[in-house]
Amino acid sequence: MLTFAEARHHPESEVGAETHRLAAQGVGGMVVPARFEESYYRHANLPEQLARLFRAVNPRRIDEDLLEPLTVQALTLVRGSALLDDAVQVFYRALGNAGLAAGQVQVRRPDAAYAETAQVTPPGTAALHAMKRLWAQDWAFAAVLERLDTHGSVALEARPTLLLPGSVLTAPDTP
Image 1 (cartoon, rainbow, N blue to C red):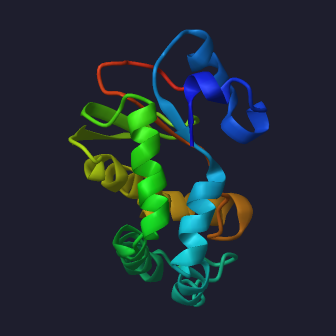
Image 2 (image 1 turned 90 degrees about the vertical axis):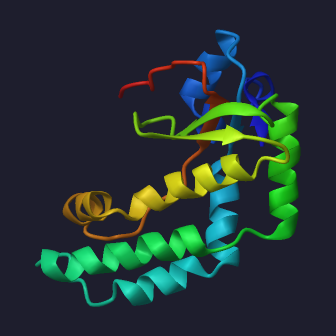
C-alpha cells in the first residue's frame, strides 16, 4: 500500500492513472494495489467458493430469478470473509502513513463514482470494513449481470482501491 506521493513513482498500470493525477494535485490519501485484494480473495478461498456458488448460472441464457439470490449470498460471503492478521496490520500501518487513521475517509475504485465512507478511529477498522463493503459491491446483482452480459462470466479482475480524506471531493477519472 502506498501513499499517493509514493505511488506517483510506480507505473500507472500498477496504481492507476487517477492516483498519479491525485498525487500531482497534492491530494493526500493512499492506494491499495490490486494484489492486496487478490491476496484477500486467495487466502479466503473466495475464487473456489464463488465459482461453486455460480456454477448453475448459464451465461448464454441468464436466469435472473436464479442469479439474484446467488448475488446476495456472494455479497455476504465476500463481506464476511476475514483478512489475515498480517494483512490487517499492514493496512493499519499504511492508513497511519497516509494520515487516514482518524477522521472521515472515502473509499472507492479509481474508475467508479460509487464510494463507501467511514468515520475512522485508530487503528482503522472502520476503513477496513468500508473497503470490504466496496469490494463486495462487485458481487451486487447489477455488477454480476453486467459482467455476464459483457464478458460471459461472473469472474472479475482485482483493481486498485483509493482511500481519501472524507473532506476531499474528487471526481473519478472518466474513460
